[in-house]
View (cartoon, rainbow, N blue to C red):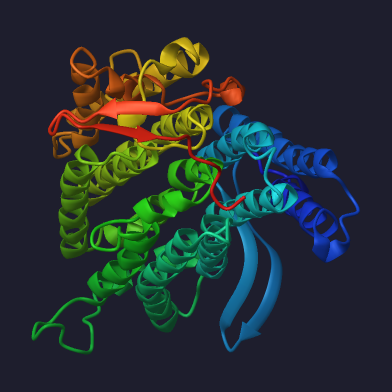
Length: 493
């Protein structure tokens, strides 16, 4: 029998990380006088995310087992005419799953950051940012109206700007965070146009009320010609909404910001590019699926964009030498697969792949950070070789993450791809996986590549074991010349 969840319990889920972020960000930095030290700062933020994860897990149990649900307004901000601007929560199976994914991956990233950022001067500030990022994403996925969705949408964009440019003394980091911010503004312009059209023609921003009027929206013609053609209003709305998803989920041609965002610390790559910001667009389309189902043109557009992203981002991933960029382009291509599933109306497949991808891609990013620490912040895979004997834990966990990525039987990704084939979703050659296979194949020919395919993951900080610092010598296969390179130092510190 279904039951209603407690509003106070649900309110505690996003507020717990927010409180931790406020305490660490105000009292743990020079802004508030550095009243609390490093240990207390990371303890407060981790405690906040832990509380959010426990409550999210209990919510998922109630939804999945007991059939619980929640769809109520928590606070009315203002009323403009007949348009209500509210803060509220909609908790169903989709939201409960996303809450658990976001909080669990964020919790692992928080714990991992204790070791990864221990030598950084901005330690407390970093914990405040990632905890604030968690709050923003939770507000996005738990919303029951488009206003709150847009608030969370913009909040994750703002905090990602701060995190990508965390090492603000590094020019490439400043360029990368500005690029991410501007590209996302392009997508957000389309997103807010879609929200504005919904508000103008329905008079509401509440999901339930909008979906109740979806049939009426589907029968209205757009009052202006688009490229000299008559189009339906629902098509314009859905395309505008998806343009927002193209920016946030890095779909072609608004994908250019994501590879450059690797300039930020590695824990942020795991948080932003695995479970949070880049999945926001996929989540939004799945949530608004009652509208998208009324427009075949919009679904075809989504299918084409997803196919292009999945294919060509894989091609680009093959030629990368930066270990984090390899994983980043793999993320782009995997997001393309999710978008293809959305365009084929296989929303459950897209969301299931979103969940599985969040875990194994976070594992790969954290493993990449482990290798980078062991290699004294050298990210070029051409200088890596024989790392397994120094980092056995990173090696075995990276192997598990790689096997999950390529859809090995008995892994969740394999189950998802089997379900995808049964729903007749289009199949595309998985080129980022080809990059991993290429690395494995090259192991017998080029030992310098061995670590690129065997050291991409760690659930904890096995990177405390560092490879002895020494000058590395590599003979280039094409020229026969020998180049000597000294170990690299931490950027921006």
